[in-house]
Length: 104
Image (tube, rainbow, N blue to C red):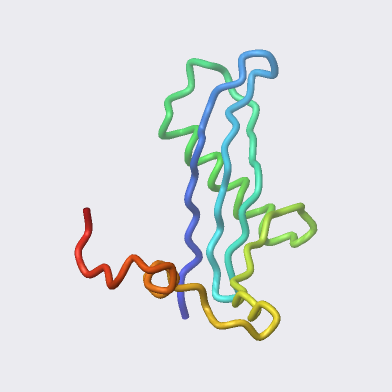
């Protein structure tokens, strides 16, 4: 059984709201979810304690399953109207530039 991993990025302190904000990526067996996360804390809090609090909040939010998160799906590009893939070398040869085997 794989362990759940939390990765924090773009961690900042928002002085206006007195919160630490981050973009949390939670990886589980079922997939990866990325969502914003914040905790209320004074500016004097150490970064390590803030990171621990953000990770805990991210795990709780992920476990609830009712948060908004981004999801990236890998998809294959569709063939364009049955045409073959564009090859610039073949195209240049058709224009009369001959074969190009070496870079500039």
